[in-house]
Amino acid sequence: MRAVAGTLLGKVFAVSAATMKPPAMDDDASSARLKQVVFTVTECCQLTVLDPNFDSLVPKLAAYDEELAGFAYEGAGVGLAALDTLVPTKRRTKEFVNGPGAPYIYGVYLGAGMGLARMRLNPEPFRKRLDDPLWGWVVLDGYGFHQGFFAHRKYTLQQRLPKQLHGYGLRAFDHGMGRSIWFSAGADVLGVATTIAGFAESRQADLWQGVGLACGYTGGVDRPTVEHLQVVAGAYRGHLAVGAAMSAGIRHQVGNTADHNDFASEVLCGASSADVAAEVEKLRNDLPTDPAIPVYALWRHRILRQFE
Figure (cartoon, rainbow, N blue to C red):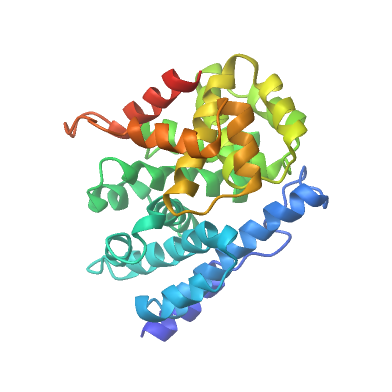
């Protein structure tokens, strides 16, 4: 049964050059980097659905280049969430982040959101079942990325919003949309800025936060380009910094730094990635435990106040 499910899901999650290339995405060095990331996620998703046993899965993920580790675990999150939806009594995703995937919880949850979008499922029931008031919102970020990138016309060009999301869920969705814009534009700064400027003003801050995370975590550009990005962000440069700061925290959490993360932190946050990551972690202290308060939103607001 597992082998059959894995084979079927492998076909569902297959990604071709045609399906992953919106019109603005060219074949330059930046786009080559972004495609490398997408295919790493896709490949690791397929590895996972074919054999989700943690003892065999983790060594396969570890075989990827260290700098790509987060994307490998993101792919695992796609596959595990898909399997969880097929067998609702299973909690593979939750077990994974409580076990060997714990350091990569951000990437795993991003992947989970992508998997739910790929299967055309409402991500909210899954998010709530995770019972994770902080990181659970990241599932909606992943969901937003998938919709913005793979359903580009509907969600980016037509700027549609998912009817099943409400309140802060829509903001988390837009973080993922912002990341998708970075990918879809092939990390072209003016293309990114022009696309975001076409959205309702109420959505632009969260879109820029997503761009900041994609720039700092995924990269694809050099330092002068990041400097240009900060300029074109204008009044949203503080929100751009939030995303970059989050990316520093995520990479340093697993000791997986990168040159592009270092200079993105220096340019957008005004400090080394190590110092930014330490500050991000400190700002997570003493968050309220009231389930009515989206603590993830409060944490990101603290980061905005620190780096704006």
